[in-house]
Length: 122
Image (tube, rainbow, N blue to C red; front, side, top):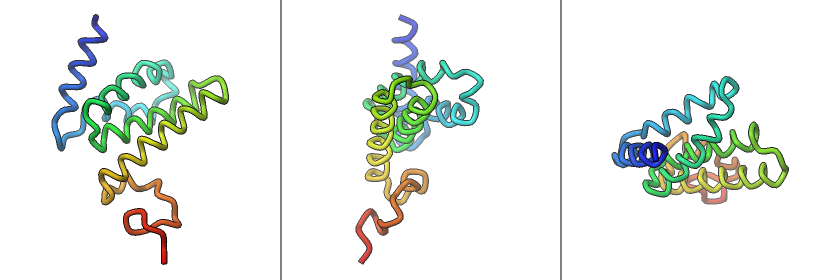
């Protein structure tokens, strides 16, 4: 029940259109210190995915990508789990880049063979 209340609180905080959700901010901070509490990745992963489904803001999608890659690198045990996590991260990052093509964080993973909003070079 406490987890449901936490999800509702995080989702409502994520609802502000231009603001960064506290959950997305926590994921960004976790990326630098994940080794201190690796189990936190397991706790935050479903929460951030639900937040991104409720509010597909670019910061939430980037948080999904970041936690997916962390999970794949640190917590996933089997190769299939790793590949699935990496694919989820790629999809979230791709959606973030589509939503905000001028956002440097969202497009930093764009392949170098693409320029100008993902159009192939001439």
